[in-house]
Structure formats: C-alpha cells, structure tokens
Figure 1 (cartoon, rainbow, N blue to C red):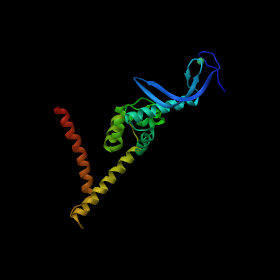
Figure 2: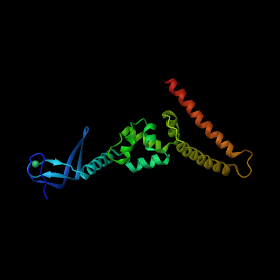
Figure 3: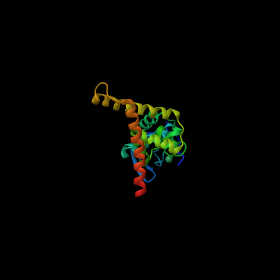
Figure 4: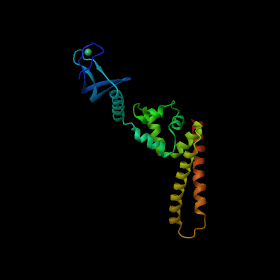
Length: 199
Ligand SMILES: [Zn+2]
C-alpha cells in the first residue's frame, strides 16, 4: 500500500531495499541492502520508525568494519572484565557523559584514538590502575578485580620459582614474589619519571 510523499504530495511512496550512500561527517559509507521509503514520482528517500534505528546501526557497523574498530560487544566485555559501570568508563577515559553508553548501544562509533586506548585497557591492568587513580573513579569492584589479577600473576610466578628452587627452599617464595612484584612496579614508575624529566 503506497503512502503519500511529503515532498511532492503524490501517493507513490513505498518501502524498498536498495544500495544507498550515507554521508557521515567527512566520509561516505555505501550500504548495500538499505531499507527505506522511496517515492516513484520524485525520487524522495526517507526513513521511518524502525528503518531509522536500523540504518544508524548499519552505518556504524560498516564504519567499524572499515576502520577495524572494536564492536560494541567487545567494548562491553572489556568494561565488565574490570567490573566498571558505563559512567565510570566514561570518567576513566575522559569521555563525555553517555559517550560510552552510545558506543555500547552501537549507533555511535568510537574514534581510532579511543579504540587504541580501549585495547590497551583490555590488555594492561596496570594502565587501568593508573587511570583509576588519575580520573578519581573510586570503584571498589574494579580494585578487587585488579587485586585478583595481581594475586593470580604472583601465584603463577611463585609456582615457577618453586619448580626452579626444588623442595624446602631457604626463602619464603610467596613473600619474595610479592615484594619483587611491588618493587618492579615502583621501579618502572621511578625510571619512567626520570626519562620524562631528561627529555
Ligand atoms: Zn515524491
């Protein structure tokens, strides 16, 4: 059943699926199976109801694929890995309110710079520790995750040392590993600070 076209007034508007170009900022995105309303009389194209929501998601997905950016489900998985809320994530990376919310919903695409930072966050608990303190996000849940990761790492290193040192070693391996891990973290910060000053 054709509908009335708001541009020319003819009752020749119907839904069709066709290839369409979408301009998003400075780029043009080509969508193969674009579902929209099309007027046979004047060529007017418009999007109604769920077509709007669908095309927003499709254009965003195409941009992510072309630029090799993380999909929304990965953003969510990385956030949940550290037990952070969406608002905490926004504060952590200095993004505006609701920015992370929109990225996870899939209609807005994160920048390449943000994507790089998020990948680093996924791989480096120490970066998250630093960002938490820098951004002032007080998340006990995230601190618990970081503490659990530290314990896990220390357990693995202790196990390796036990194998090297054999039974009944003369040192308290757990204490040694804990002290060493803390010393390495502290030294890294101090050495890095010196390098920055010398530059
Ligand atoms: Zn028309």
